[in-house]
Length: 315
Image (tube, rainbow, N blue to C red; front, top):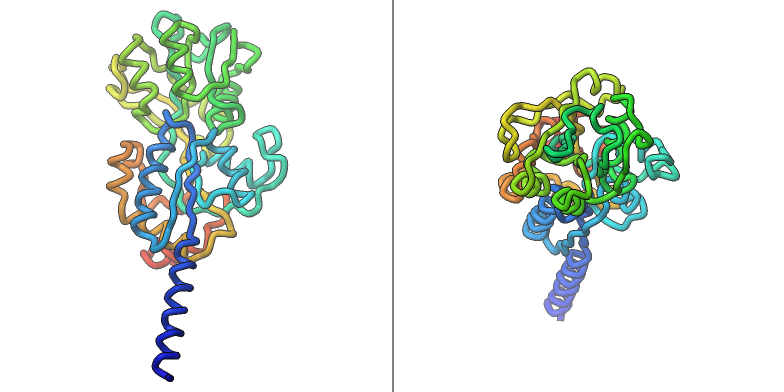
């Protein structure tokens, strides 16, 4: 009888463990389907489903940074992509940026690849410099998205505001490109990894000009999250020269309610399968383990910290 009781107890434990594993839901919050966050989120979801026992993963397309951070604060997702400056504004509770209160449950999983602010105009628009945007039709991303926050910052540093433009469109990347193809828009500002599919698509259909953001404009932004960068020649069809611009590092964000063990496995499996992320989008080449804890404006999640200590990144 004793042996049977032990067997029943063991089976009960196994059943409980299986149920507990089945309840590890991981929703990856991304951005619009034509951006970089989405394909990387799909790849990350696949990595997690295979590396974390019992994980049930899903990918949610969103309006990106601000929406992702608000969803994480509300516990409606386990990990999400965001631009670094949006994370700073969420942590401090910047209402103008879309955060009505300080989002104090946010925790960092990793600093990942940089986003390049890419201002692309149709050649026929006559736009060659930032000042040429005056009176023109510009798309700046979804309202209060990380891209739109970037647009405000860059334009202000160049001495411009939305009032100086002919028309401002608050549209995702893919829709902006369609309007440019139809000559209903002069330029689009997109904050994404290099080689973003929306601009590649545009450049193969319309002669384009990649507009420079000079280093002196980057300095005037006055936020260390913004760093001078270069869009290398040949990134897009018809772009035959390096173009100076500004970059903002992306951050993978989670929240304090996600268990330490889950975040540890999420962090570990991501860095052990970076090749799968690179296969999903070349922007992932910019994800470096040695830079994962640099410049984070919010605390690391204990699970991520555990992994970084394990690999000697934090001592």
